[in-house]
Image (cartoon, rainbow, N blue to C red; front, side):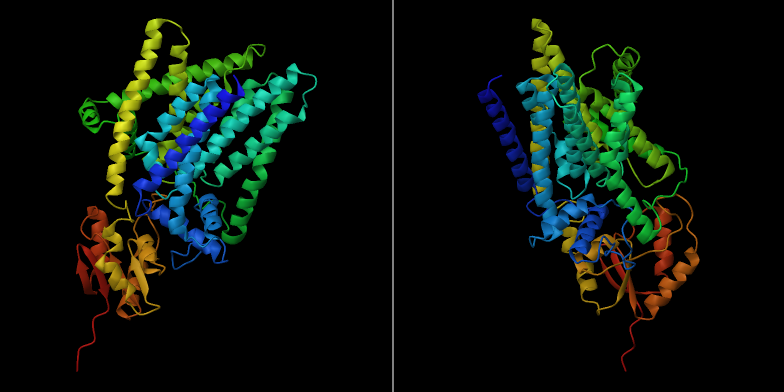
Length: 535
């Protein structure tokens, strides 16, 4: 391959990355979509910029944040040093990340197959995938997590590549591969500090080092070097949390089984990723257990492939190592799934198999899809190559079609709490006009903070959504809230009243009982103390 060919390939990947940046900016003229977690990241960044540290300033308690790692908020704060508010900075950051992730995947496809075309194909499949695009069009930490994960995969691949050269050449420095392994540990730490799911990345690389090295001395040495890059960052964050909040990650070990509803959410999102055309997907999802079967068969096939490649190298150390990027990508799928399911079972009952949670798996599946297409092309038989071309054209055509629909939908208005329903809300205007210092109890403390610039007070609740266990002091909490509102020092703001489940709705009715309904528009109700009668 000539330098000119490499330059052209890099240029094409750069153009695809630039297109990705443009598409995110074009599709989100009113800003990225916002959720509760989005507001937490934005508020956390504002807190850092104010010099108060990483605190939950969207809540009246204003406690140090440990539930969300600091990676994404820190990047927003860094951008905020330029004067750009983190709310606007999220759009800038995630558009750049969509371009950067497109470019990194192009490099991964290129390095994995030694084919420039395969690299461009992988970058294009990611760029025009509506599911991945939607992940980057919301102010969440997943795009940054994917970036650090891809960087870690590339560094890990480079480690084995340089190591092979070091073995083959007496001139090569034995320290060279270790520096790439150390860098892999650093990128893994950054991924962990962006999402705690980065522990799956840690487990993936450690397991791969054990499987792919020839003897235990090399396995333990390489694991130690890798951990030397990871541990300082992760340990520093854990020590900080222990000192300021007396907990490491604000997780409590409590068993709560996966619900059928959560599994259905996961299958639904998987079907959207697998079948981009909505009319086709709706027809196929009517077939009982179709997508569950597809997912199970795909997982089984990948598990058998990973087990065969890994165990063969482990027990027959003289055999050639599997291609690193594809092997670790497949291995990571199972590590990530194990991490998420363990979190749902033992630490956080509120986590669901939503698109953003599933997105790292989808990235690995795209990598393996390109490997499969390249494998077909390498057969050098006409009908196999024809099949590879048909699969490529078919998937790209469907992806571009679905992407165009996604962009059209996103341009119609802000998503989630970025919608006009929230920023033009009459209830929010009412809250903004309250006397300074008035406490606001609400079922939507995130948007209340965002659109009134006032911290909120969470409502008393019967069940903790994270642990799934009953909360203590519910009756006392209700009594305290009512007393505070009736004193004239606080209000109760209930948004989308009547749209929640019966259990939640019964709590709202109990909270509002005996209070004065001062505002009621579009189902948003605000309760205050009773007005003083005019003399």
